[in-house]
Image 1 (cartoon, rainbow, N blue to C red):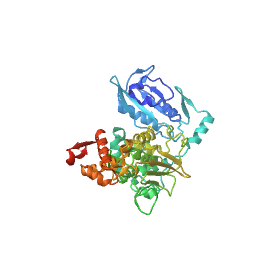
Image 2 (spheres, rainbow, N blue to C red; image 1 turned 180 degrees about the vertical axis):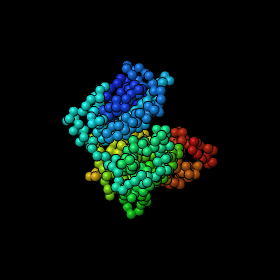
Image 3 (cartoon, rainbow, N blue to C red; image 1 turned 135 degrees about the vertical axis):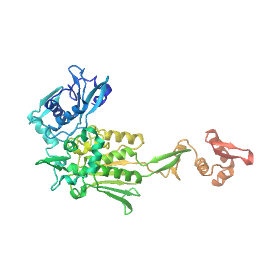
Image 4 (cartoon, rainbow, N blue to C red; image 1 turned 30 degrees about the horizontal axis):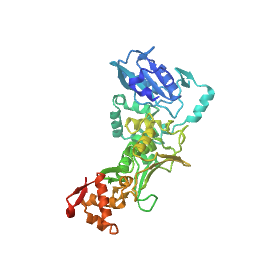
Length: 462
């Protein structure tokens, strides 16, 4: 299905389970039907501006067409939260691409009809299949509920303005309507009220409504919990929480420089991208209905552990977590995606695995607990046998160098030159002939240069 998202190959694909073509002059209900059918199946893509057998007519007014698409999504029950449609060009003609994410947490209907995508058709869902789908996805969304006593004044208008400006024209035309489409506002008796999602994302005082919405960051010096630690508690809107926690983790993970052989190499305990994925996934996908428990991230000398309240949602399990998608908090996920903090297509775990592998580290460990989810990243740590004074000697060991030769090289890193007498003093039980052979071997290997003759001879790094 990833191939569908590549504009260069899009028009070579046939209509089917994950792809539908729609003419530019569509009816709202016609498009909404296809959106509902794909949302109730495995997601997909709708391309606006193509009719018949790949006949391209294009989209003449992109802004008006995008608004009509959002109206179609809003006409679904419950309203369908989608990434903003975007424009691609084909031979100078505009096409509008609509992405329907896989793994949505609701079952959608249009005018009371439940549909799903089968091949190229949008068909009614049989009763048994509908019953199973309702059981898998659930019928109540915590993020769409309105907190008791919450009013529109609970929201920070500067944060909303910043978000609207980031999204652009689609949100700026009517920001209240757009926030409704995103599931951040609900309308009661002609009055707008913030939903739980709206408070989490734009609230003035998130902690007053949701004290469980906190991220606790702890750094221990060793490999186990101890009485000596550094702690930070963050209680803020989700976007600010992610940004502040990311800075704290970056500043507190182990990092430095060391010599690998004769080359200086900078290192960091974990790939920053992998840490960010762990953090953002925890914030985006935790179960916020669980009270009395927040997200906990602990940095140890050898690992990072991130605990998130709530077990895996829907049909996702430990065994299929890399391949399957299910969004418990689709409004939160979509707004975080609008900010560029998360990938709505759901490739975050794949990216995390790749980054850990490229860093030469073990793959992340995923584990469900009685009431939550735990991710563990193993990081780079020093090894007393191969790391001496900040210098990684493992490459020298692989070359088969003796302890005396390694000692000579370590001396050179600090003092820049060494003589036979100095190495003899470091190894008094070794004969002068053995010391001479040690130096000759290092010269032949291209590690040292010999300077001078007889008693004036000394060696430097090549």
